[in-house]
Image (cartoon, rainbow, N blue to C red; front, side, top):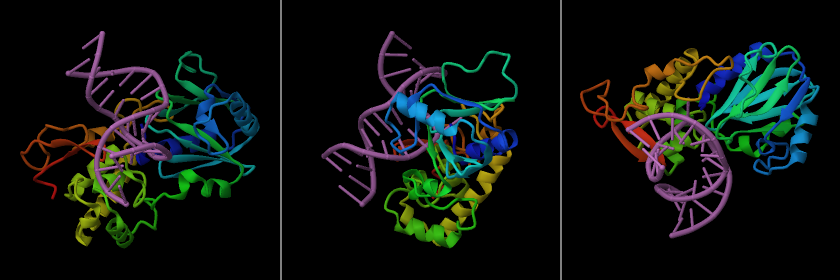
Length: 287
DNA sequence: ACGACTGTTATACC
DNA sequence: GGGTATAACAGTCG
């Protein structure tokens, strides 16, 4: 489900709900989704029990985000890094839920917080939760080590973005999805920012002029906060922490609109495959 | 019913 | 080394 705006929306929701709360019990129903070693795909009951043991009794002191990763912070210094991949969801229920909807068959991890319950659901089970003993361990972990600039951070300047694109070999779309030049864009927002900047996603990343890099930079700086403000894009499984749906999808100008008339001209939007992903653009409005 | 599709990304090839 | 296929998996759509 989530690209940066959706993950950030979840982070803001989590801050309101779990800060200062103690983890009374943890249930790991899908052992393969957790790890403490970074060996993400290893499946074992021992790992599940170890995750539960490590987190039980911990008190939430913060929730941060790096790229599309959520980082739960505990007072002890321990951390949980969560990546939702395609279909992960965090859902919080204030009281012991009486509706009986959760846990469901796609609920894989349950955090009981005393006066509420945090569920991790994931239909396709690509996501994972990794625990670490300290902030330093998280920072040097393999999943965070090679990430590019945070698009909403001070380090994401036009000059650095331009220089970074110049060094890349592949298509612009592939580079935007790679999380190397800038992080947080996925298939939706990569297409949306390319359209807003008037640049074709099929262009070689290194071929962008400084002016085009500047347009793309500005599109990223504008579109991501706008999407966060509207609660993200709910296409299929994405929901906020309270299961409400985001409203940015109705502002999508290209994603999911292949064949429709371009909002900037009369041409039908082209739908192709680039970097292995469905990609939509306008051949007139994007150069 | 079946194949193609899906908001991700690590890995394996040619 | 870039580009593409594949894999992890379940559900939905035409």
